[in-house]
Length: 361
Image (cartoon, rainbow, N blue to C red; front, top):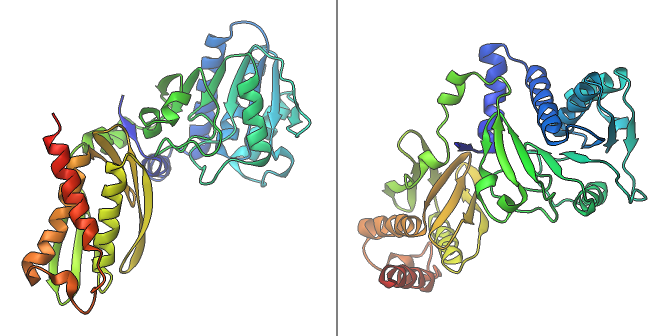
């Protein structure tokens, strides 16, 4: 199974529309119907309960519910914010179609405390999740997890970050997750990977030629390359690349701050801690997320590119950046007027950690 980032999935959806004439509505219709088929396979008889959020993941859920009604199945649909869905949005259109088919959307309230059904479909939150789960969404997830019925998750278990596998406060514990179109990186990253149950990818109509053009995360394995170029009086071009793409940024007087941040990330990883840092690189501020898979490998998300590489490789690449600076300006340049307070102890700590890692049998 190939795994991709959330950004790649969004690009695939956009390009499917602009280059192949496959609309987001078409993709949602395909996704919802695939979800319905999976629900029927898991629950040949009985009541299917569907929890729908107010985004596109919820839209998939409403399409699923309408398809199940057409097939003569009894469904109970609980929705968050269904009454306030924006006119013309995909989720609104899907909810209206479900109701036009004869369906009823029950509101999720804090008073809801008992779910009776034979299968639960989780369509609350998907790849758009960017903050900790709270309020009605948290309440709904806890209800789902407390229910005895098996759970089928749509695309991602609600509450799991699609790129990092982080549990955003609370997450659905699914028995099966049907990932839409592309495999999501989170299904291989702890702790979120434990929430997926059986993870499968379903075809929602993304053209094969389009998907073939994306480099999956595992194809990026150990291809991280950091380099420092065009160094001149405190100015440097930092290049972040793999074999097929390259991102370049200009760092001026913040160069040593940048190197210090990269070193801090490596030290955190050696200590067994995942981390996220915002790094100022002219003209943009970028976020680097580093997630430890195990004691040997790390997932790095730098802007929109995700790498899987060994911890040792990342540490060596960071040290190489520092050595490139020293090679240009000579040893001891962290004592220059620009960065007289550069924490050289971090550098020595990282070198020591790397040596220790190499010596461990």
